[in-house]
Image 1 (cartoon, rainbow, N blue to C red):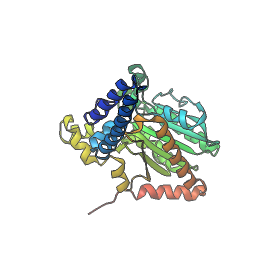
Image 2 (image 1 turned 90 degrees about the vertical axis):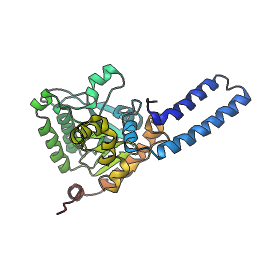
Image 3 (image 1 turned 180 degrees about the vertical axis):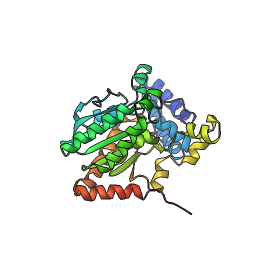
Image 4 (image 1 turned 180 degrees about the horizontal axis):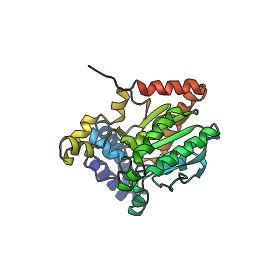
Length: 314
């Protein structure tokens, strides 16, 4: 579990259950464990029903939350990772390759974070460089050539803002992805599985269907970044999260996404298998909704979908 105040009662109950499990062969202890498990389920339901936007942000960033490769392992078969942008190099912050979903080939691409310090540095904390976005676009074009659907899994704080990334054309790489994704002739689905930060997320998000996991976030800027700019104080990130309307419920109400994928009780980090099962069902359902459309009709619908987001008011 993460070191989150709102999860403290859950952590305490889990610790008590673990301690008692050593004596689970005793009838009286087994009854007590069952009662504690019922209490745990009740606590999880109550706590997760009233999370604030800032607390949802923390859940979206939970260190034990499943990442792209975790979902790929559980949902797809015969995944073959493809590397490099054929211009500069490979970017481990974005992974992608061909796989089979329900017996059908597709291209799956997503941001990838690391679990420990070594992996986080290797994956650049899930913040891609330009070559990552160019690799993603190369794989999308490969899929289009062979008429395979494209699935993207979004989980990044944002594109890497370093000097080298800017020198190699970070903004141009993102802009090119936005344009080319809007033109792809194959069915496309995007799922925000954790953090959806700024243009770094949107560069994989211009698709026929845009979905969000229940406790994920999607925003033009991180709460900390917003607080630093608006309030000149990053410590006001909680206030910024409230005003950014970054939760899945907020974005569904605003018409920015097409579906919220429910998570297991207590969040995806508590049950990877159940979370993967729910994600698999949503992927299947949403590809079915767009697969049979003619590519021209699908592209027109995709264009109209993004054009009508937001409105101008005099």
